[in-house]
Amino acid sequence: MTDAAEELRGRLNGEAPGGDARPPAPPKVPMIPAKIVRLASGQLPAEAQRLLAGPVGEAIADAATYAGKALSENTQRAYAADWRAFVAWCDAGGVSPLPAPPVVVAGHLASLSRSLGRSGLRRRLAAIVHEHRRAGHHWESRHPAITATLRGILSQHGKTARPAAALTSAEVKTLLNVCPNDLRGLRDRALFLTGLAGALRRSELVAIDREDLRFTGEGMTIRIARSKGDQEREGATIGIPRGLSPLTCPVRAMEQWLQRARIEYGAVFRRISAGGALEGRLSDQGVWKILRSRAAIAKLTVDETERLSPHGLRAGFIVEAYLKGALDEQVMQHARQKTIGTTQGYRRRAKITAASPVRFLDL
Image 1 (cartoon, rainbow, N blue to C red):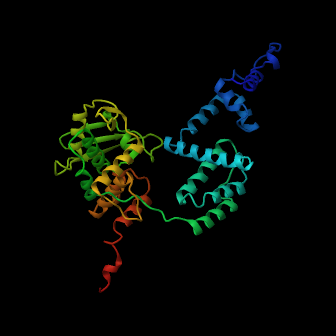
Image 2: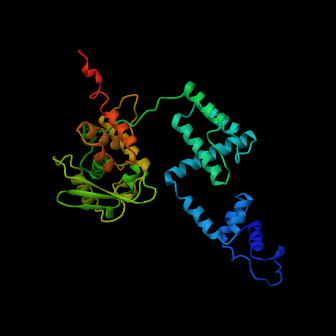
Image 3: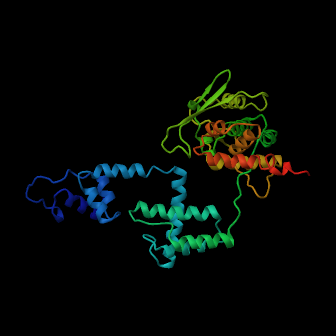
């Protein structure tokens, strides 16, 4: 504990400066736990420090700890990287990053206008807002200087959003054709088929443990403990029936992988060394590398307005399900989507040609 924090703790607990005890007196507040001292030692405004030093301080400290876990780990890492970049930019320019005047933030966004796209700029702004509010500063991202700058950047340099190309059954079968019957090939087959049939995000794919899987004669269920849209950890269970063909059945592919790899507990999808030995859990980035490698071998390409991404497996399920007549509620439940707006966006994408009113023309 620093000297300043030790002195603060001493003052809060009735000690005089320098460590000399004052005459005995009934304590006005309980002993202050170390975690509250750390929170109160100059990192928060004076009013927040007074609250932390009061009788409800420990409860407030606990609330702050829980609030810090409201964002997913991926989002926290992304925000942390964006904030470090902003701090470095401010340091180089001799300005304070916290609190930062809106015109400084606008200038920072302008400096990134040619290197970041629409989503990247908005994430950088979200990270700056997050850090200010976390430090107790009332900070409004809708300041005219910021909104006008963003609109100007996007109108002049804005790049068209490139959604993940939908990898439907046709594309996945192309990928399966270049997955041999060795350990790595069996893993990749199970990875692609489970991602498609489960409409899974790559973070959900790599998080699957053997204990999350249940097999029956009809198929398998996957317990998803946590996902991007489920920060409260309510969890979800999805069912995947056995496929019509043993070559493309997701359940059979998973059974073969688990049997060959002898995985009885822990991470299902794992790294494989050059010598063929199983290693630790596969990462999000690892899924992307596998997809890129197999797509290159299969000569699978996507339209230039789209991008090859593991999210394409999830998009592929939703798009193909809509094309085959699935209902909104069926898609939303299986893909664990919270809003009908998200679902309808995929539906419009799936039926952009099939449902076009141009069909009514005499052409």
